Each structure stands twice: as structure tokens, then as C-alpha cells.
Amino acid sequence: MLARSARIYTLKHSNIAQRAFYATSEAPSTLATSNSTPKVISSCPKDTVMPGLAWLKGQAPVVALADEEYPPWLWTILEPRKYTEEEMKPGGQGFKAQMRKERRAKIRLSNFMKTQ
Amino acid sequence: MAGKQLGKAAMVRLLVPAGKASPSPPVGPALGAKGVKSMDFCKEFNARTAHIEPGLAIPTKIIVAPDRSFTFTTKSPSTTYFLKKAAGIEKGTGKPGQETNGTISVKHIYEIAKIKHEDVKGMNMSLESMARCIVATAKTLGLKVVL
Image 1 (cartoon, each protein chain N blue to C red):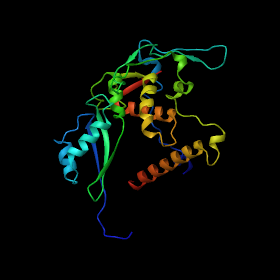
Image 2 (cartoon, one colour):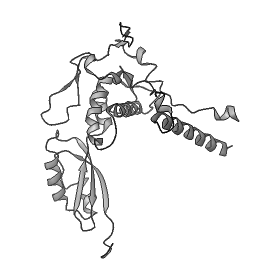
Image 3 (cartoon, rainbow over the protein chains, first blue to last red):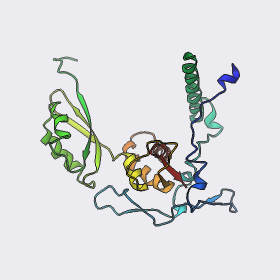
């Protein structure tokens, strides 16, 4: 019983996070710098024109900025969201997300068992 | 509520080309069926979308009151529209998750998130959450998102 309910349905992010580093010929690399956070080099260099994003009339074409000018959270959006200790306490975002995941897994399991 | 029951307000959701609303299909019959004068709607819509690149499909929600007056709200073009343009593809794959048909950088995602975030300004949603939503949408199109 315990083993069965531990079988959690997981979303497959395989085509996003894991393959990212094998995807393009200019694979993005990370360099460990003196401060412990790795410096990310984007596959999209500065001043790359982004087609189609200038949707207002007379808007200048949207171009990519240098890597440093983007907020730090941008480099983490491909990985699953990590919650802090505080957020995992009852009432926190992490707690809610965890409960939602378990609730859905339970429903899926019960739906499956009803077909057996 | 005192007074006569006039009936319920109706809602119509349409994709209307910016600055190019015209009484003919699809706008005309959809609104005419609810009792709205399509010419009035078109004039007001074109005025409100004059600042947008002409021809872009703008999702609009029209609420028609029982007395045939209407109000409408517009949003930015669909996320998939921006993603397809940025990746240079015409259509999403028929087999998302199994086939990939393009690559897109997180920088593109960031710029798209900035546009779409305007639609949810009133809500308590961060730009980071919006960016994550758009990454998920890219996945459904079969686009690979890289750093």
C-alpha cells in the first residue's frame, strides 16, 4: 500500500532541461567564477534581433541584451522550481505545490484503480 | 433586484485583426446574433487598437448587456504567436514531447514574458512565474528552450 502510493506521476521535462546542453552547436557553457554562482553564457549573444516581438506600431525591433543585464532568475527557469525551508511550511508556496502534486497523484491512482 | 428581468448579459470571445475589424465575417455574424451593431464595435475596436501593428489577431472579449450596449476588453496576441515568430516556425509539431521543430533562448522567453505580463498586471503574478508559463507553452509547440 505504501509502495503503491509512493508511485508519483512525474511530468517529463526531458526535452527542456536535460537536453539543453546537447541541443545547439553553440552549446551554452557555465564557468565557475570566484563567487560560487556559475556564470552562464547564453546561446543568444548580445544584439541578436528577435523577430516578431515588436508588436506595436513603430516599435523598434527587439534585440537581445548582454547576459549580465537580465535578472538572475532567468537562468533558473528551465529547472524545476526549488522552494526554501520557509516556503515548505504549512501555508507556504512550496507546501501548496507539494500538496497539489500529491493530491493529483492520489486522484490519478484512484482513477486507475477504478478501471481495474 | 427590483424591476423587470431583462435577461442575462452575453459574452462573445473573438480573435479580431488589429485595426482591421470589419462588419463582415467573422466579426459581423458573431456580434449580430447577440444584437450588437457591428459597425459601432468595429469603429471603437479600430480606434483602441490603432497603436498595434495592423493585422495581428487580438483576442477580445465582448460583453453584451441585455439592452444591447456592449463593452469589450482586448489582450495581447497569443503566446504561441510570439513563440512561433521568435523561433521562425509556421506551426507547432503534431507530436509535442516527441518531436522538436525549433530552438528558442530564455532571452526570447524573457521578452515575451514582458509583453504577456501586461495582461495580468492586476494579478499577483511575478515576471518569473510568467516566464515559466511561457516555457511550458513552448514545450507544447515542440520548441526546445535553451539558455
